[in-house]
Amino acid sequence: MATVAGAHWSSRFAFIMASVGFAVGLGNIWRFPYVTGENGGAAFVLVYLACAFGIGAPILIAEMLVGRRGQGSPPTAMAAVAKESGQSRQWLLVGTMGLVAAYTIEIIYAVVVGWVLWYLFKAVSTGFAGFDGVVANAEFAAVLDSNLGMLVWTLVGLSITGLIVFAGVKNGIERAVIVMMPLMFTLLLGLAIYNYFVPAIDSQTHGFSQAVTWLFTPDFSKIGFGTVLAAISQAFFSLGIAMAGMMVYGAYLPQSVSITRSVLIIVMVDTGVALLAGLVIFPVVFHNGLDPAVGAGLIFQTLPVGFAQMPGGYWFSVLFFLMLSVAGITSMVGLVEAVTAWIEERFNLPRHQSTILVVGSIAVFSIFSILSYNIVSHWTVAGSNFNDLMDVFSNQILLPLGGLLIAVFAGWVMKKQATHDELNPLSFAQHTLWYFLIRYIVPPALLVIFIMGIID
Image (cartoon, rainbow, N blue to C red; front, side, top):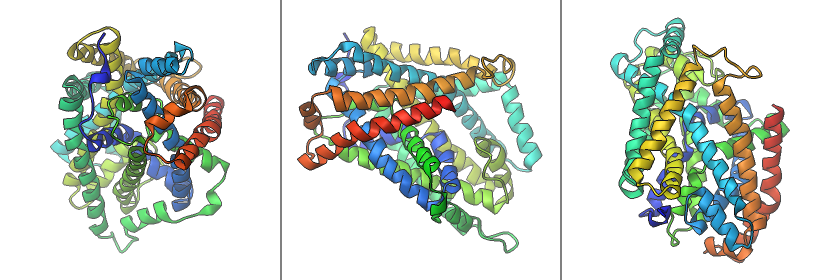
């Protein structure tokens, strides 16, 4: 039987770049800054960091240690570790849930990444010259009406992803992320610095200053249960927990690399990227008097208007959508790699066949996602179309439930000594802290997220 155990990262740097690339996605880049601004700015950031390190990091550590301990795709790793602990191999179903979540998310996500690539092409060809609110809305409506256009750009994104995964862990994923992630960081930093030097219009408040105020002025009056719940949810989803990618990445991690140190770096970089993205996006929004509270439309309907009005808007738009494309592709790589590794292992197929099977099937199912934006948008179940149902199924059910079960597995099913062995060189006190969090803090928090998601 083929196995993923033979593949390993060549360095901790490559592993961290791949993991951050998987964690930092499109939603993370636009949603985190907005949620921060709406929930108390710097006060929310403090709550988020507490949740990220107190809840997100422990379960991320658990997911990676299970992957490395089990040395296989998520179902195989869960079954192997359960057997080692004298428990039922049926725990493999938790790993299977992660694969189903990854596959389901990728069907929807591939289409959105296709939009980003299409807008990168539009930025290169036009720079959004002459765009105002009416034109931007009409342009995006035309995108959603063009099934052929959406399919073509979805296939472009999937093809790039497939080529990276096709080449394997070291020759494909490593080489890609070692180039793409520093490129993304450089673009983010460069665009933020550019925003700082863009002069105010008509002596109005500087857009960069307004963005800093929006993001970093603490307002503790906004901190309540809802804010804490938002911070837990953001930490959980932005770190890519229970999507199978982190577990299979953990399976490729050499024993010499510290999981805990790597996870702490991943959490800090993930948070830093999200905040830096805020200093890229919101100065453009505030500088041009646009609405920061338009959700996903911010990227495709609001920002192009800002690009059209700002000095150097052509180059800014090109670099922005290039940065966003990198974020989208690296997230797709993690999702596709998890499923490909399982296919390769389970059916004893060579990697190129497994990759073609996974990417090809996602391309077919993505057609349903594309059609749900126009032709079959009226086909609903309980008021929800195909995309809505897939989103609820993955994000509201599979992810929190899968994360909860992984925490229970690591804290209550695995032998404590096995977790200690994988988390060397943690001291006794440090391991005790993690063990306490994964047993008594993380499961209740994820149970709340799961229940609230179902109620919502």
